[in-house]
Length: 459
Ligand code: UD1
Ligand code: CA
Image 1 (tube, rainbow, N blue to C red):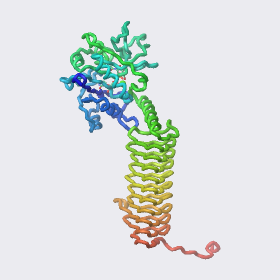
Image 2: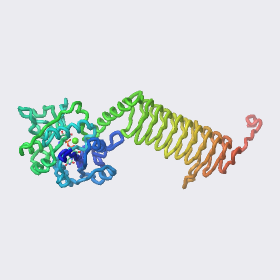
Image 3: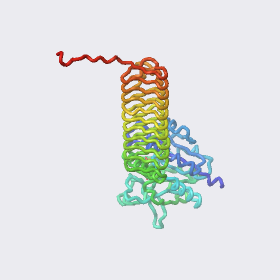
Image 4: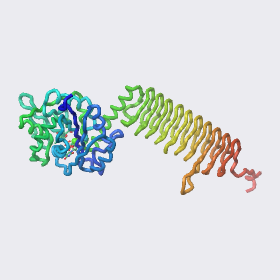
């Protein structure tokens, strides 16, 4: 492969995103759990791009921080004077490079690799100086329109703001994905002018500029691209893009063998992994780095965020699991809440209205109803009765509770931490345990019942 076939990418992300009315730069707004610009960056390795450059301006530092770890270079566009001006800002970084440059707008995350590959290939095989992706839309509102001569050759792109009424009826639009020969681009981009309604340097005017310089401009039309090219300029479009992306994510998981009872109401981030034969009920929200094994059952309206479920785990309806792990065969919920790096062991049962915080529960143990267990280490085969809780906080500090294998914690007892309940020990119902309970012992820590005979007759 000669150097002229080298591929580079430039992503424009300096704009204000005015229509978002946000403190946060537009390209960092998330769709399905990932900042929108990251969808583009994640396509680049498949395209074998040698270098990616991002043009930043508004909120530059925030964007740079958010993209730490991506192999990209940043250039600054101090003032946002248009998409053409954004590319001009990158010229110093492009000087001396030979090959082709794909220019992407940071607000178009739905594009798939194949469309971008087609752009590069057309550029590489025809030797054109610019190749644009165009698409026919039923409703072209907001996009730049493609102007062609009688021979069908593109000669200009007209931004919507600049269109005549007749031009507004043109259905072929500039999708916003374009490839340039770097030398041709760098050699002519200074000829862009800002004499237009917006007073901006439009990148779209490069069609005119290159043709004036005797250079070749080509277009590719990509099938079914109308969804892929969707640009996000406001929060309505952000929501609409998320709907499209969610449908793509859900379709993929169904193809991988996951049952979604109602894909339309199931929200799965793009960062989630799910094993086959898992069944997910309506209304589930599955976020972040959640990893669900094979054969799991996720009930209705379950919320998982950075949760890890081993094969065959069940999370019943209306449960919330954050930053926690559930081993195989365990059943959690309905109405359970796990958080703070909780670990639920194999075949454990955590029932309704049980909250676990930073707690390890050994295999086969049960906390079936109405418990708070925080900062606790619970062994295997333990039974925590209804309403039993750890008192882990003394008002200033958190303290640990240890419950060893086989222990039985009677209903409605309070374990005042720090405290340890030994192996196979029994805590009587209603006890307030403030001292360690030795192995095999019975702890009763409540006042003895007195029955006063004839009480009701007295008064
Ligand atoms: C642009 C195209 C339009 C196309 C549409 C496709 C131009 C002039 N118009 O319009 O033909 O149909 O995309 O979605 O190119 N940006 C900068 N610096 C600037 C201005 C913008 O970095 O000075 C960045 C923005 O952050 C954004 C991208 O460029 O990510 C596109 O800018 P935007 O204002 O959204 O362009 P559109 O009006 O959508
Ligand atoms: Ca846009």
